[in-house]
Each structure stands twice: as C-alpha cells, then as structure tokens.
Amino acid sequence: MHAVLQYTYGDDYLESRERYRSAHLEVAWAAVERGELVLGGAVGTGPFDGLLVFKGEDAVELASTFAAADPYVTSGLVKSWTARPWTTVVGVDAAKPVRP
Image (cartoon, rainbow, N blue to C red; front, top):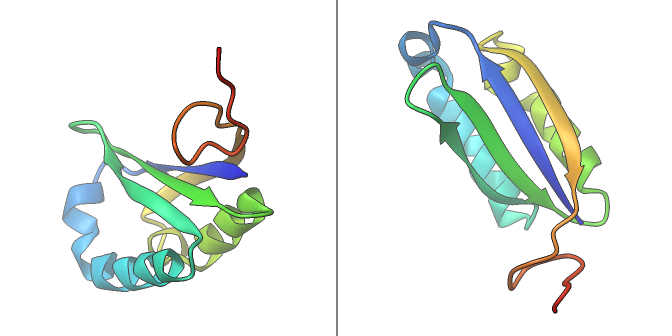
C-alpha cells in the first residue's frame, strides 16, 4: 500500500525553513532507512507544497505519524497537511499492478 502526504506551506517557507531543515531531513532519512518513506520534496516554483510518498501495510498511518513528529509541522512551517491512500497500479513498485 502507498500513501501520499501533502504539506501546504506558509508564504514565508523559503525564509523560515532553514532553522528546521536539518531536523526535518533527519526524521525523513530515518523514515527512508526504515523502509517507510519512498520519496519526498517540495513541488512547484513557489508557493510550494510538499509531497512525500510512503509505503507499508498501513501507509496512511505511517504518513500521519511522520507528520505529527516532523519539525516542519511542529514548528508551524506547515500550515496544513493531508495523508491519503494512493492506489498504485502501474510501475515496478505498484501495490496492485494492473496490466492490459
């Protein structure tokens, strides 16, 4: 199963992130090492959103737990977030591959 965690940042994201970035990256890379986080990063050219892709038996719960502990969220840099299931059907790592 996969899940997408989407962050909505405040307008001052670029100016404010530096004080929290190292701690944010620490928890993100720890999630990668546990096999939970597949990819993550900012989307757009400003204003930015953040997208993080998780995998696991309960990927939505993994994503929600990550967000609750993420310094970007706990500091208020993230104005809102959502964790939603993502039914992946195409690709090497698709959870439910469907072929023609």
